[in-house]
Length: 367
Ligand SMILES: Cc1ncc(COP(=O)(O)O)c(C=O)c1O
Image (tube, rainbow, N blue to C red; front, top):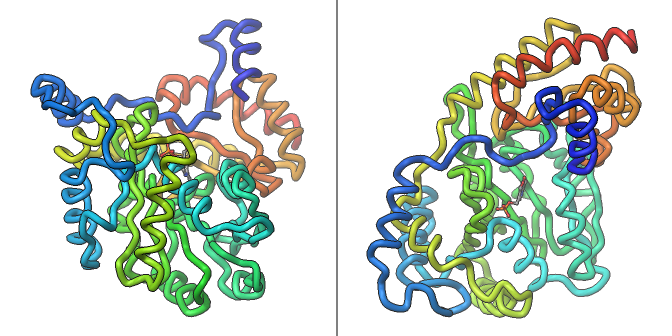
């Protein structure tokens, strides 16, 4: 999509290309985050730029542990939290730690395409399991997919690409079918980005065998700074071994440690979040406009993606029609679910408005 975008911009002029394809926040980090960054730089604490324990600065891990403990009620301590290079780093260190070649990891279709690379990086095999028609986990299907080689299930709520937030009841049912050694990796970079006052259920509480992969990439709009954490609940029977393995994996995968400066920043303002109302307004505007044209575009409950059906089953074909209108969207096939497209709400509002006639014309062509 990136290459096609460059080409289209050359051909039509950048002002005539409407890029709905990239999940890179278009807003700036909240002011308290920038203020904390300035403070950390100004303080220039001794040893704040050097190597450190692979799992991160102990005092930062203590702050984060206290926050996650307060949120979840689980008695996390600094030892249970490992600072990582984003959620990507957190997921990769877990998979590196638990997978032997040929082991299986369940992904819920449609899924963030990088998961497949992450699993295969460490010799694992992806088992894709379809979600329900509302994109909720289908527990019966998951139970049927669990076999002797299953080591993990990756959950992502709020979800990329569907915007679904998983129901507490579904997560409870899922808990009942997850048995040792299967580990649930709950990937939650979009947790603060939820709409209509929704509170996403706490996966760590509902699923006994879950670990949390967190990232501030989307919450603080700092995706390029590569900062997140992995939280391993002490109740897991393998908690100590998993902590040690993941700490070592940080090093052997070449991450060494998460970025020093940003560890210090997030410890000062761990809960700072971008303005969610802006995304919600764009969600409402886009979904209302598409639905009134005749698209089927349900409002996402969270994340910053809309996942409408393409008006023809051939999503790749429809994406090409949109490209002729200067609109870049990601085909559902890229996430394992043909017949859909992902539209990112990180597009500026004026581009969003100017793209609407193109959506209308593309629809007319196939009707
Ligand atoms: C579902 C999901 N998980 C993980 C990531 C990676 O996030 P990070 O920047 O924290 O590595 C992304 C980024 O788009 C994502 O959408």
